[in-house]
Image 1 (cartoon, rainbow, N blue to C red):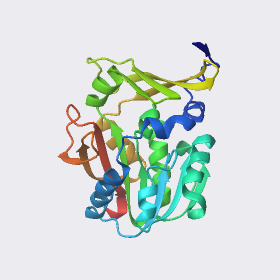
Image 2: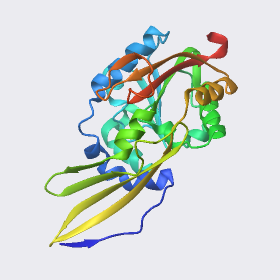
Image 3: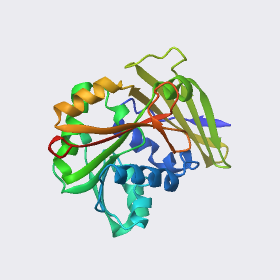
Length: 268
């Protein structure tokens, strides 16, 4: 087998996800977005969310907003990667307003009842000052009484998934994940993993695309401080299991994700 390899795009989030866009849906094919988003929507409504205007930040290929469309939401979605948005457009058609945005520099796009940022997008924001900028952009887009909902990877996630290897394959595509963390990973540290895609180009040639994923674990106190500085109040912090179900109060050492709900401070 001959392998041809283009240059590694590096750690920049936009170039990483531009390169990953053709393979992202296959890599996440086993994720039950319908169940997961139904759990999250129920949690948001129990904490005051009322209307059906959704802003989906870092929407990727649209798998996170698609179930909300089926539940009657009016959706605006944005992502830093134009290639991920291109895939999202094929999923959503004209039903969703899709915008290319860096969530660290988010302008006012409207007044939304629910603002979501899912699938560990905020772990790619590795600076606490930039985390505050994201939260300020969320605050800017909340309607009166609106709820913000976002998730973050936990210590458990970095000590397991980011410390392991995995392979996803079919006849013409092989995806390999190589986590470079270990069981000693600590709070607030940076984690790195490589995701490689091998595509059958015919004639015994496989084309390789390499992406590097660098994320920071955000301790709860750091998140709370950034939210406060951005004018948001915490409504609740919950743990989520690997199947997408909410498990009650967060245990960073046991749950796969931390789920935060927040609102504008004046509406808390």
